[in-house]
Length: 55
Image (cartoon, rainbow, N blue to C red; front, side, top):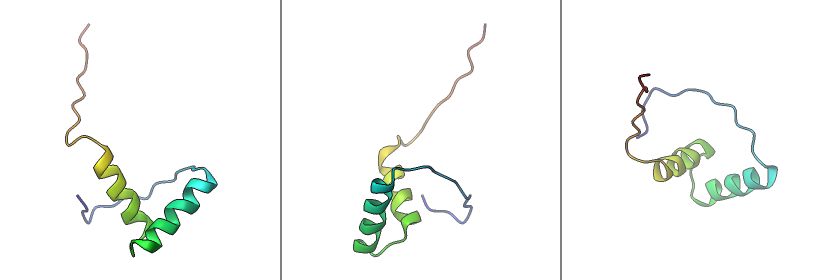
């Protein structure tokens, strides 16, 4: 799912969670960005459909 089109995002995370994620990224020899992207790809459904309700 990684593409060349990236966008900067600001997140507010619990400091303990961030520390844990950074440590895991080091263990996995990947960047924090790659770790977060991998986690989101695994968590999110393959496709999300949003339909506008007509009133």
